[in-house]
Amino acid sequence: MKKDIQPSNYRPVAFKDLSNGDVFVSRSCADAKDTIEIDGETLPLIKLEISNTSHPFYTGKQKLVDTAGMVDKFNSRYGARKK
Image 1 (cartoon, helix red, strand yellow):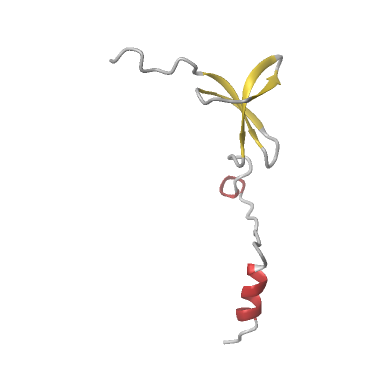
Image 2: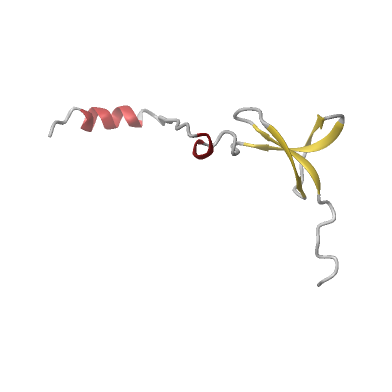
């Protein structure tokens, strides 16, 4: 094996899901600007937009995101048609 190829800053890091506030701890070598205290220990904090606790695939809940009225526009064009 090659020497000195492993990262030197591999440590416990807290990851926070911003959509629901869920926090979990894992090991990582990613840089973090913020910190959080969990169980009396200060850990680096990495903020996530989405995780397995809020992703529709894992939760089974689908969210319909309407961007600029595209669903209403579609329904007004094609929703009233009959076969």
